[in-house]
Image (cartoon, rainbow, N blue to C red; front, side, top):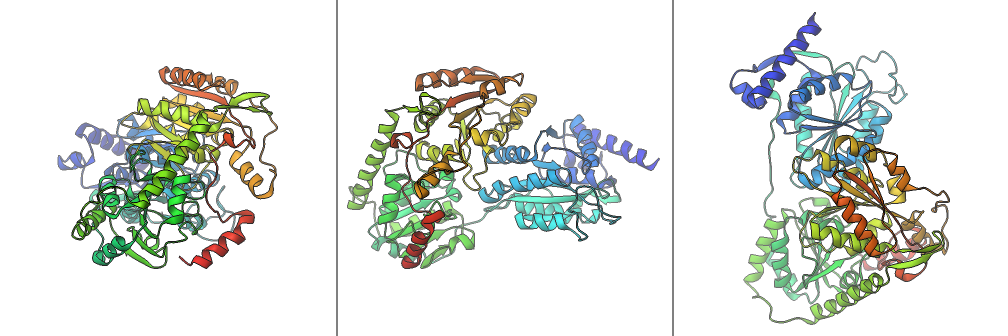
Length: 626
């Protein structure tokens, strides 16, 4: 009888919240009492509603049945939306894309065991890229009556919690009354002002239905937005460094996405040039005269030239990961570094650093004001800018030569097919004209992609370079169905990445996704094959002997528009136009070239501490000592 009363109270409460237009309004009008009898599962959902989390990507199991019932009740009254999917990795990627593109918060719900582990592995993406996502996992019961099915099968406490704590901030709700603390810690993590990430809330199966008598709803923390200010630091000394340097380079990372205007002004004041991280595409317009494009292990002629010759580095919002700074050998002539980053570990990454831990835009405003006291705007081009500009022209000519040769004969396909550079360039230009959101999957598609895109503002290209998680781009298209502000997505993927998460074909149709999967098929893991050939002169176990008809595979799912991209830029554009006109999810299959012809790719221009390159790369790093 008590269970029935709780159900009835829940139904009445949900109706009151829906009729009042939200929890806080229902409490103000007295429709919902300040103290209520409520199950732990419902309290979690109410707490997340207070933090404006109203979207759930879920794969339910025996470890989440009670939470699922609460979510059903709240969805029935329009207070939340639940999107059931076929894979926990897909759920995580979709949630990540939703927050990344639109800012909209969501939670990933799984059962205990393998499902939670799949989502945990995918949480490497938001952990690496700094994106706040809630993860709600089922957990073993707290009474320890014996091993629960799908728990880690050892007689130790909290093993799932220990694993989650390695990946990010975590909390196992052993005691329901500790919920407010768990929610507050989660809020601090997913809404962190400069380094958000995944938060793992573990709900033991026997705790979920447990009823808290007279629970004070005001304990549930509400949404709070916290910012950071300009950095404290010795701006005068930094300005002197900048004014005495002859070749200033500015590395623009993902932490500078909102700092486009002051970055541009700063470059003019210090006579600097910029290299762009893939995550920061568009912060500086592509054709800006001081934009030297991407730099690093898979960089560009101009970007890497600037890195090799600069004498002072200004890093803005950059983590300086291995490929972005050539495994710490990217700046051989730099001896002093100015680093603007609110994270102290990143701000002090290099030796001989003046660190400015603060907001990039506000800190740059202070820098610009300080420099203006010592120098007015420069007249004409300096030798440094002219030299870099020449390399930028070489880079554009280098790419243009490949675009002018869009097809090559490929023995695997037995015919001429599009090269990856030409296919990606064709699709990128097409998408830019229509202001379409672009997602890039891992591998050769990703590397060629960030060398090719020409964004004029951030927020149009999303390249998951933090974890390079195969299957991210195609799963990201599910966000087009979920977002409050609808958008069309174009996912660039290879055959290997696509097969990591092909279930998006089914879930995309089921939930009404609108976008296109551009599947560039070279029947191999081309990025690794290419690396093997460069290092050891042959590739091994990275090619695919199995023929797959991806057009027919996609056609097996009713509701998918399945198309051939042909073997010319014109045919590809025709397929893209047909896909865009389709009111749902499309897949375009494009055979692409792989081989030793240099026109088939965009090349590698930097060092990397992998394989048989390690000895030389490490020796250079220790010799330069930055």
